[in-house]
Length: 101
Image 1 (cartoon, rainbow, N blue to C red):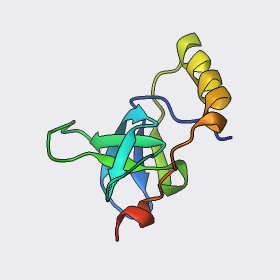
Image 2: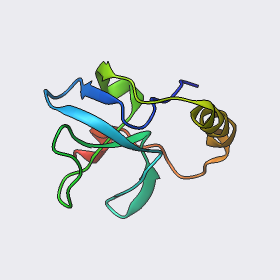
Image 3: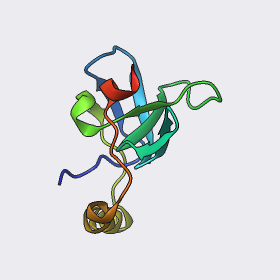
């Protein structure tokens, strides 16, 4: 399993030029009535989150990590929990290309 980026990390996606700030990990997403998840959700940087725009993607969609967010013991513990629990998740992991149809 990959180590997820910390909250507050700034990234650029392979299919875009905008800077995005990671605000959630393993967010739920409903695609055509089916519930699943992505590894990340993000907002535009530097404007922040608004009601109309959230971006959902996975680690493989990231082309550049511009800034890695804060990490401490709590982050390390969260990473361990993610690694331990992800294999028991029963809902599907979506891919960006699957939601663009």
